[in-house]
Amino acid sequence: MNRSNRSWLLERDGTIPLYRQIEQQLRQRISNGEWPVGTRLPSQRKLAEQLGVNRSTITQALDELASWGMVEGNKGGGTRVVNNTWNRLAAATIDWDSYVESGAHQPNLPAIRQINEAEYDSSIIRTGTGEPGPDLLPTEHVRRILADTSDEPFLGYEEPKGSLRLREQIVQYAARQGISCSPESILIVSGALQALQLIAVGLLQRPSCIVAEKPSYIQSVRVFQSAGIGVHAVQMDEHGIQINHLQQQITEHQPGLLYTIPTFHNPTGTILSSERRAELLELSSSLSLPLIEDDVYRELWLDEEPPPPLKSQDRQGNILYVGSLSKMMSPGIRVGWIIAPVPVIDRLADIKMQTDYGSSGLSQYVAARWLADGHQEQHQTWVRQQLRTRRARLLAALEQYFGDIAQWNAPAGGFYIWLSLPTNVNVHRLFTLALREQILIHPGYMYDWQASHHIRLSYSYADMKQLEQSIYRLRQLVKQCMNT
Image (tube, rainbow, N blue to C red):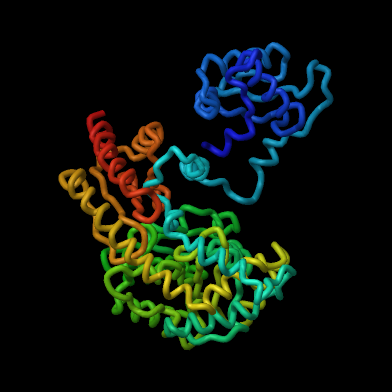
């Protein structure tokens, strides 16, 4: 059931007509200020789909509200709230739309907002979701950690840099990746995205810019842009970021730092080659260019271990290293970390304390126990086995249904396959058509506005039988788009 339906209480077999029940609940939302004057209501089509009624039922409900002067249609389409009382003598109300539109943080792309909403509809098949599926999560391990009364969890605020116990575990965990650090150089954050937010507001001047691969996950979120930081793209190929083009972009734009996902890149799955890693480190050193190394996919190698992290070769403190438990253990636990020079960590810890007064102490307790008890190593071995099977099945489905019309590379790890469709396929239209059939894709333009004929597929979340069926149906939809 779609979570957004749960707040609508409709009696299908009741004596009150459905349109009247809907009108009453719409009126309640308007009267209590949930939908203040000036709010654009969801479209009639969307409300009808959400509530499982005919569009004519929604039309009747809105006509009733319009007769009372509470809503009206506008020339630009849609319906807006114009009054929040039963009469037209209402006092002037705040124009919240003007506040919403003038906020500093940029809104998500419309497609991303649709994805964020659709992902909570259990009837939709999620073909691009970048997280472990429910069957890959270590629910029983976590339950045992929480049930163990021999070691009581800490329920208060943690210190600014996060739980010392957890940071000590991360020191050992990082050492196995070749990274030498101390607890003082680690900040616990609520996922890797918060790490980027803290860096954006805490370390960069305004106006300034950063550089990142093209395409890149960083283009699908607005953390840097909303902080007044521009993002310039650097070309990639099958070996990762192109160093020559990076040098050109640095000369032209003088960026404050480089953001990179060198291992199992999101969305392409690419691994930065060892040769280019060496070149990138030399370039960073010679130009004093800081790097953000987003390494959240490292443990998801499926064929062979990738090259060591860039941070493992960093002797000058040029690299801000971002790690997380979201991709292997649990996205819901919201535990990630930054490893960086101590002055940087002190600065970001101060900002984090101003922002949320520290990440969840309970989550940090679970994470520390998870690492200390050796669950991470055991679980990642099992997850890799599962992902190898899923990858093979998705690649087989692509070969069967897309072998003659698309291109892709088999990833050596991570979650993603970057599918290149024929150039005459409008992915905007494909996204809409697929969603109507309960198939959710991640269009390439989320990660690069020029990637208009790409989609990101994932083998980590959806039930494999459903995913294979979706690939079959997507071929039909792609063909439909090609013929129009």
